[in-house]
Amino acid sequence: MRGQITKRQKQLLEVIYDFIKNSGYPPTFEEMRGNLEVSSNQSIVDLLQKLKNGGYIKRDEGARSIAILPLGYKTLDRPPLVAFAGVASAGPSIEMIEMSGEWQTISADVAKFADQVSLFKVFGDSMINAGIDDGDVVLVKDQHEFVSGDIVLARLNGSESTVKRFISEDKPPYVYLKPENPKYSLIPFTDEMQLIGKIISLLNGSDWRPVK
Amino acid sequence: MRGQITKRQKQLLEVIYDFIKNSGYPPTFEEMRGNLEVSSNQSIVDLLQKLKNGGYIKRDEGARSIAILPLGYKTLDRPPLVAFAGVASAGPSIEMIEMSGEWQTISADVAKFADQVSLFKVFGDSMINAGIDDGDVVLVKDQHEFVSGDIVLARLNGSESTVKRFISEDKPPYVYLKPENPKYSLIPFTDEMQLIGKIISLLNGSDWRPVK
DNA sequence: ATCGCACCCGACTATATAGTCGGGTATAAT
DNA sequence: ATTATACCCGACTATATAGTCGGGTGCGAT
Image (tube, rainbow over all chains, first blue to last red; front, side, top):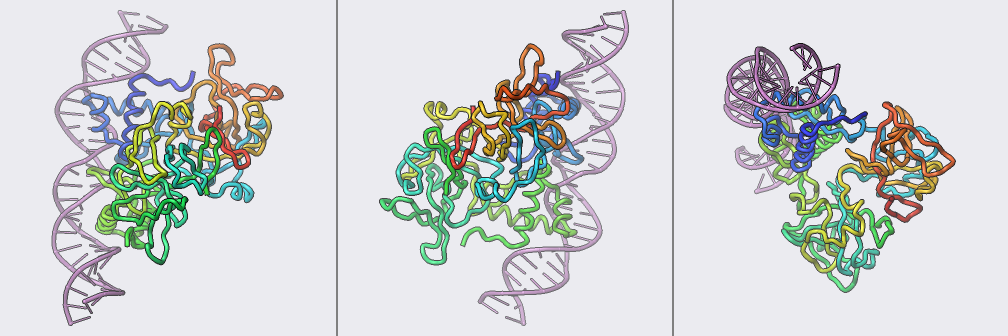
């Protein structure tokens, strides 16, 4: 049998996982102690050692250098992907290679996504000319940077959000959100507004398709 | 103008981003100093302060408590998604709400994916009965846990990988990979093999569809 | 000219943080 | 009965790490 893990070890693994998810960085011993309701560092040391031996986490020297490995059943270093795109085999088995030029052509704008993605359901008809209909579900990738023309999920204020095309240009109104339906008007970008992510794919009924 | 960021600040942001991506946890001052080729902590303190003010990162008390915020143009806390699924509006603008029962029905197996996803191209016909054809592109979600029946991207050894159905059952051979084509035979799971992720979606030509 | 700003230096300090030490308990297997 | 294993305690130590202090440089704006 593989993947032996006790209840307590699993609890700690979940605590670490949740902590990283919420805060963006790993917990300290103290925080782990608090969550597991133990008072001794030794408990954490023991459990971490087991998790490491089991291949669930990796640890380096220094404070908070815990990372959860991307597997549970059996662990490994990340496979040698190129920009998170690679080649896998559904035949008897073929070696992994770098992505080809052809591949990049197929879906250059989806090939590079990584990190966080989320699904959202869209209501309304303001993006109908971009192929996004009322009730469609979109795949949103959290991003750091946007370019003019991206279709984005934007937050208008604390409680409202919307899907629109993001435009940034040299003439007024410079930066704004543009509906893809002549019925609606532009929304100038204000300090209250925030871009959440880029829409990279679309689920209509049960069909997925890329979004331009 | 918004999103003011100097060259040096951007360099540091990239250093932090890369470090987290590679190691899974944030860098120390020392590591940042090394990457920026400066010798003084003050430089890092200054730059971090600017990045924080600009909304590019968040910082908490304690060692290595840096996290990159999921935006570049203007920053915000993560929107209040429920299990990374929510509701956005493409109409004039509607408030966000929790996901509905109907939504869960639509795509329960895709709704919960988060974290790392990658695209792979599949060669061969061993999964043809599961609807995965030669040349298809699959969306792979890195996972911690797998259940019997999942279609997975598995690594067979250091250089070979494959897409198969993962089976774990009470009778021999207990744990194995199962091709979805009678032409091919089962692959018993060995210590050398590792599960990388679960196939959650499929791009055939330009159509996306979920994978069962 | 001199002010502010972005950025940097080198030595120092405070403390957060991981880890050690020497134990203990409970349970299950041999 | 004895051993092994998982888990735990409380006090202690070593040091990694962030941050301070008191400066300095170069550059563009007023």
